[in-house]
Every structure is written in C-alpha cells, then in structure tokens.
Image (cartoon, rainbow, N blue to C red; front, side):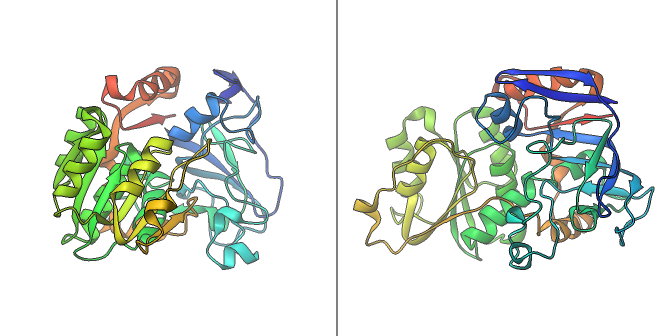
Length: 348
C-alpha cells in the first residue's frame, strides 16, 4: 500500500508498505478515503516530537471504510464509513473513566506517533469501538476530517477548559485551524459572547472576521500596541477567557497580558520550550490556567452539531489534494500564509 513515511528530522517520502493486519481482538483495519495534514505532523518533521521515530507512517486525522474487524469489536461492521479519532482509547482504564482518553493506559496519541498513522491506504486502529465514530451520509468526508482533531482540540481545550459562557469576553490567540475552530464554536454555541482574534497574517485574520470575530488584531503591528488595542475594546478590563492556540513563548506571554481579573487562560497548544509564568503581575488577579491534550470525547457531540448545521467544519478546508500529490499538500501547508491554506485534506 502507499504510505507517507517520516524518515527523520526534516524528511518525508512516499513508500510502498505492507497492508496492516489485526493484532488485537479490539482492532479494526480501515481503508482510508480521506486524511488531513496537521501542524503536529510538521512538528514531527521538524524533529520536535521525540516519541515519533524514523520510519513511522504519519497522520492522525482521517475518514475511511472498515475493511476488517477483530473478534472483540462489538459496535461496528465491515463496510461502515467512520471518522478516525486522533486519540485511541480503551474506554475502561482509570484515565478513560475520568474522560482523559489522551492518557489511556493502552492508548492515547498513538496514530502517526508511536504506531503507524492514517496517511496511507490502510491503517490499523486499536480499541476500535471507542476510537472510531460512525459517519452519517450527510457529512462530507473532507469536512469530517476536521472533526478528527482540530475541532475536538478547540472544543475541549478552548471552549470547555476556558469555561466560555454567554456574554463572555473571549480573546483567541492564533489563527490556525484550531484557533479558527475555537472561534466558530464560540460564535455558534455562545452568540452573545464577545470575541477578539489576534494573529499575524492578514489573510487568516480576514477569514476570522468572516467567521464572526467582532475585532481582529495583527501582532505584526507590535505586541504592546496589539495588547493595548485589544484591551481598549472593553475599557481595559481584559478578557474573561483567553484561548492560546499557537504554542510559543510570545503567544503564552500575550495570553497572560490579555487575561482580566478572574479570567481563564486555556492553552491547547504543543509547546517544546519553557515559558515564563508572570506571577509577579498575576498573583492577585484570581486567574485560572488550564492545559489540555485533546481527549476526543467530544466527537459524538461535534458530529451532532455538524448534522444539525450548527457548525460547519468544512469551512476550514481550503485545499484538497490526491494522495499522488501529498508532497504538494505538505508544501502548501508548510507555506500556509503564502498559500492562504487552512486545512489541507488528502483523498485516496
């Protein structure tokens, strides 16, 4: 089968690999029809994810058709069209019972990390009953790809962890697919919330405006002036919720400065360097800081929201390539600003 393989820091290639087989009674083999390129895939290629070793098939987002099932799978059938969650979960261990599927004793973020992933013709999915989700026919496969990771990350790490509520003043730092997903969810679920989006590139900020942001600000105009302008919107009080969706020292520092008294910083990003926590200025502001790796438990709810047209994950999909052009898909996503790229989807 065809597969996109990580060769080591800075390098990927397409290889011919054996079709995966059932290894555990709870496994499924899925014939992949659509997969996505994620910012985390780029982190791996840059050598920033040491848990992913050379030779790994990349990818943790996808849609496909069940090709084979282990005897322990109870809720799925061969031929079902399914959404592949980015997190594999047994559903039974202490972490799963607490809703922390990302810390599953025999699962977590496996696909495209510690086991072969979704950017291939076929993929083995552990714990299929809890890691695959039936897709209704009205949800297009390219749109569904955004529900594998981007939307659950935004919903769980931003909306839920941030405790977004009606009338809240919300600042979203970052205009990648996850930041824009957080914007779309906030506007759809809490229309009375006031949302400011802060990013860099003007093209993505314009998209944020079209998705319902009341105000947009570019850090290219200077960090201090951006903070001043954003806080001036609500008379300098700062924000009830700041969703940090970039994962850099600068973005985390920006989030701290935007947070108002009693506010919450919800950071959902992948960090690979230390960041300063400015307790000298935050100690008396009654703030809450929350971090989270997506658990995928929100996927059934997000599917219902999509089926009811409350959200449209397909709005994130900017480019679609065939697998034969997957290298071009990566090049497009790596040059997202120049290419006006949001979510890049690959069909097989």
